[in-house]
Length: 358
Image 1 (cartoon, one colour):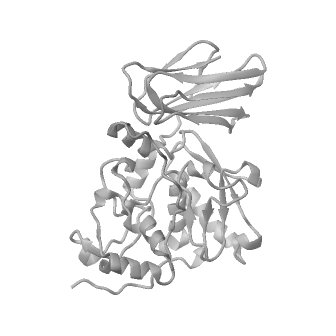
Image 2 (tube, one colour):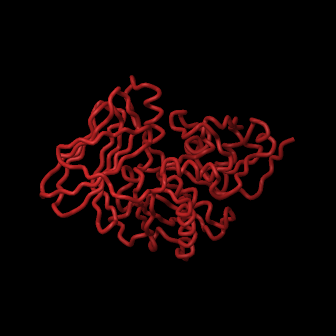
Image 3 (cartoon, one colour):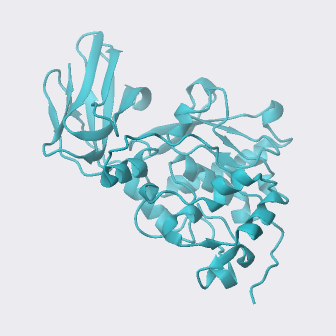
C-alpha cells in the first residue's frame, strides 16, 4: 500500500505564465520540433549579467545570507564548464538577470530568452520567496541551481511527456492548494499537471534525478511502477543528464581567432541543428551596416560589441518559423570590434545558409 504521508511539504518553483510563441499552421512537425527545442536558449558564448535587489520590499532582513546561497549555485553551474558566463554587476540597467528576494512571492524564473521579452528592465526575472538558509534541499543551494537552470532555458523535467507520469489529480490539487504553496488550480496545471508539447523536449530521455524535477510523494502518482509506490525523489544537485544537456546546448568555448566578416563577402553556414558560427566584425568606417542571413533556414543572430574582451549585447534577430531571413541593421563605429553569433535551428532548404555584411 502506498504511503500517503510525507515529510513537511516543501515550497516549489512556480514559473511565470507567458504566451506560447505562435508558429504558422502549415509548419512541418520536424521544423516546429527544432524551433520549440531551441527557441528559449541563448547563443553560445553569451555572458549573463545578474543584479541583486538588496533593499526595500525585494529583500529579506538578512539578504546577504540569501545571496551567499545564490552565489554558491552560480558557482555550481560555472563548474560544469559550459559556454555561458555569469557576472554580477551593480547596474540594473545593464543586467539581463535581475534577482529579488520578495518574501511570499515564491521561487521562480523566466525561462531562457523570455527574460529579455516579458519583464521590464527594472523588474525581477528571478525571485526567492522563502529563507534559503532554512531550505534543506542541497543546504539551500538546490533551489537557486534550479532557477538558474530555468534562466539557461531548461523547463521543468517532471512535465516531460516522455516521463509517462500518471497523476492523481485530486491528490495533486489538494497538495499544492495547501501550505506552503497555496497555488490556484491554473498554477498547478501550469507547473505540474500540464505536459509540455513533445516538440519542446530536449533529447529522448526523462531524468527523474534532474535538478529541474520536483520531489513527489507516492500519493500524488497513480503510475507508472515503481513511482506510484515509492514516489519520486531526485538525488539533489545537478545530475549527469543535466550536465550533458547543458554541455550539448552550450559547449565550452574554444579559443582562437574568429573569421572576420568582411563587407559584401558572404560566409557559408554549414551547420546542423543547434550548431553555431561566430564572426568578428571590424568596421573601417562609421555608418549604418546591415547583416543578414540568406537561404532557407531558421536562425537566431546576435551582435555584440567587444569592449576589451567583454561582450555587450547590441542587437539580435530570430527568423525561425517565418519566410524571412534574420537581419540586423545598426550603426557600427570604426575602430571598434564586434562579434556576431549565428545559431541554426534548421536548414530546411536544399542549399546552405550564408551570412553577409554590407
